[in-house]
Length: 316
Image (cartoon, rainbow, N blue to C red; front, side, top):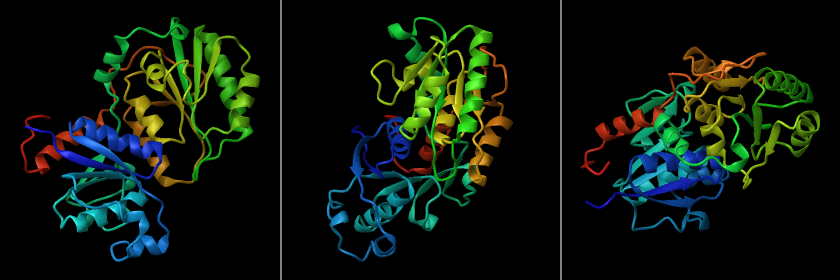
């Protein structure tokens, strides 16, 4: 039996796109990434009535699935569903900005506080990373730079809800210096695309020990997945739901650098990870012993989707 077809609607934000792709791959369906353009207020509210250049490419033949993530893609998904005469099965990830009835399934994290008969609730962001995935990566040969044991530190950056100040950077520097000395171990520090260059330079200037290794985004030295898969422990800033979710999905001891936020959603998400004992707040020491517990939302999501969809899933 041939695989089902799918459009992954992208708002060009990597975190959103990764979630949609992870789900499409787990569902074992053929997907095509459709890049969408940002819509203004008028376009969003009149999209199904306006003949816009931004939507002219959305035409038959339509796929059997749409998977979308991020507010902007919700409006495109609604339009495609209408154009296909509701023959497409639509899946939206996160809490949508429009009526939930526009989607067949909504996959929303607990902190989004989204309720309805078509809601599948998760603890965090969707990711393909789980214990089985980590085991498969660990079978590969370590890159030369990672021959010794190491801790991985994931540094995010400023966002709508978070601001990393010099005071926070100084606290990170003090804790990393202390932890490195205590464990006599290499520390791999990975920066996200949101990390300000000045913050990167400040950390590099003040973490002078040769055991600190700095990795910029898209570096060829070592990949993000390799860095978290082989790490003895992971330390991550709290500004990214995706980064924290991925760290908590590895089964590695995970420690959170708390970046103050006024967002109730972010606070609830971090509290949930702590309450589930999937992560701990970073203090002055860490454990390097693997946890017996790891987050694995996506497998549960796929099981629930299969139950809701009325077609043959023998290939999945």
